Image (cartoon, rainbow, N blue to C red; front, side, top):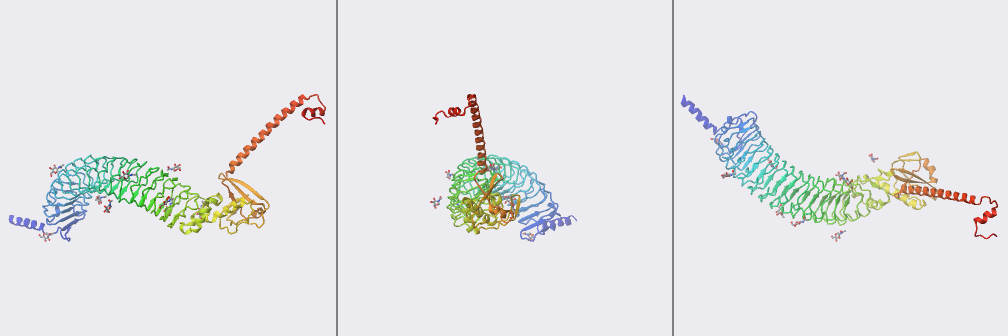
Length: 615
Ligand SMILES: *[C@@H]1O[C@H](CO)[C@@H](O)[C@H](O)[C@H]1NC(C)=O
Ligand SMILES: *[C@@H]1O[C@H](CO)[C@@H](O)[C@H](O)[C@H]1NC(C)=O
Ligand SMILES: *[C@@H]1O[C@H](CO)[C@@H](O)[C@H](O)[C@H]1NC(C)=O
Ligand SMILES: *[C@@H]1O[C@H](CO)[C@@H](O)[C@H](O)[C@H]1NC(C)=O
Ligand SMILES: *[C@@H]1O[C@H](CO)[C@@H](O)[C@H](O)[C@H]1NC(C)=O
Ligand SMILES: *[C@@H]1O[C@H](CO)[C@@H](O)[C@H](O)[C@H]1NC(C)=O
Ligand SMILES: *[C@@H]1O[C@H](CO)[C@@H](O)[C@H](O)[C@H]1NC(C)=O
Ligand SMILES: *[C@@H]1O[C@H](CO)[C@@H](O)[C@H](O)[C@H]1NC(C)=O
Ligand SMILES: *[C@@H]1O[C@H](CO)[C@@H](O)[C@H](O)[C@H]1NC(C)=O
């Protein structure tokens, strides 16, 4: 009987190394995969010992004990992902002498016992991400001398023990992102001389000290974005000669130290956006031949220093947008950017742009300035931009444009000018000439509408300008000219004159073959602008009948002021006259007293004109 039982156990043990457990799948060569919620205890699976890869996933197992696995001499990779593990005993992995990769991703681990990895001296990859780890024992990784990849992201770590990474001299990649780390011990990374990737984003770091990264001579990729960094030591990045990517966006940086990026010759990615930067130091960037794009949006910058980008000679894209306080750009702001292809300056508060600011950007193809506060642009602002193809000037509070502004742009394909409050006065005529001939280069040309004069608001610039200009001329010529009947006249509007509402009147140029005999001038004040409405008397009848529409001449001359001063002058004059009269009256009365009694008019005359000899 005893022999029988012994035999049974023996065959069972033999079978352990041979058959596939019922809840597992052994179809793949060398790999066993056990998954599903019917697995509640890993030990009860009785895993065969001759598999190189073991995957136990999405089970309800909550613990791994010293007895969960038998001896696994050939296993290289153990993946225990997405289970419900809350505890692992100290010697649980003792039976995997050759393990190279251990993945404990997506479990519910809160703590790990000290020494649990001590036997895994061949381990190269350790995944502990997506757990609830809040602290780590200082010696937890002390024996993992071959570890190359340590993944600790998505945990609850608030700090790291100074000694934690001391023996990880072969580490290449360290992912500590999405934790709550607020402080880095001085020399936490000092042994990681082979490290190439360091991810610290989405933590609560406040300060980056001088020595934090000074031993990481091989580092290529450093992600520090989405922290609360307020201060970075000036030389924090001075010992990273191979760094290619540095991400500092989404922090609380208000100031950057002088020369912060002077020694990063290999950098090809640099992010700084979403920082409340108030100003940039005069010297910030060193030579970075591989840096081709730079994004600086959502900052509190009000301007940028002259020459600040002058070392970035290979930059192709510069995005300096959504800086609500950025209101000026100095003359040499973009000096040195000789290879820039695209410059985005939209959604700032730019009102003064130096005339020469774009002059060096000889390869520029796209320039966007929309959503600013430009009002006017100078004629030679875009000179020398011979490669410029796309220009965004929409929604920039532009009232008018110089006629020559786009003439020097041989490559121009499309200019966006809509959503601007165009002032349809005579000054726009030169620009309109260009516009009429280049409608194919203007985005949605009919969407350019007048804002002023009041009576032309919302009327297409193409349709409106000329008639205004015509009447300006007509006024100068005392209405002697015959109206030019070519005037485009498909203007629809509502207009009220002398209480007569003209709705949707087709505007016609008032044309006369003979000079009108007299004109009536009407003034009225709308929105603080005095409108001089000029109507030839001969036209009044037609006007009242609704056949003609009066065409307003809106003047830039400050008539309200002139009228005010005229009134003032008039009043003063009247008062002076009054005063003179009073004086005269007093004098008369005195004279009267003097001559009291004398009744002969001759004597009176003699006294009044004493020098004249009596004839
Ligand atoms: C494990 O060993 C059994 C025999 O003992 C064999 O049939 C099976 O193919 C082996 N599996 C692997 C992955 O080597
Ligand atoms: C590093 O490993 C050695 C053994 O290789 C060990 O003696 C030492 O204590 C370890 N250092 C730390 C900080 O754990
Ligand atoms: C961080 O670790 C995760 C593993 O969970 C990995 O997928 C990711 O690529 C790593 N790096 C970054 C930059 O997130
Ligand atoms: C730029 O990057 C390329 C590889 O992408 C590299 O070969 C080259 O050396 C780099 N240039 C500089 C100046 O770092
Ligand atoms: C450009 O780089 C050189 C050397 O890298 C540095 O001395 C200089 O100050 C930098 N200039 C600016 C304007 O950043
Ligand atoms: C934008 O500039 C104008 C002056 O041009 C200023 O009044 C306004 O406050 C500025 N807006 C912001 C958000 O700074
Ligand atoms: C345009 O560029 C040329 C050199 O290509 C330069 O001599 C000239 O001064 C520039 N024009 C303006 C207006 O800056
Ligand atoms: C300006 O025009 C571009 C292209 O049509 C568009 O993407 C952008 O949203 C416009 N901006 C505004 C504020 O209208
Ligand atoms: C301007 O005209 C468009 C269509 O022609 C119309 O939809 C819009 O309401 C008008 N706006 C005003 C302020 O009249």
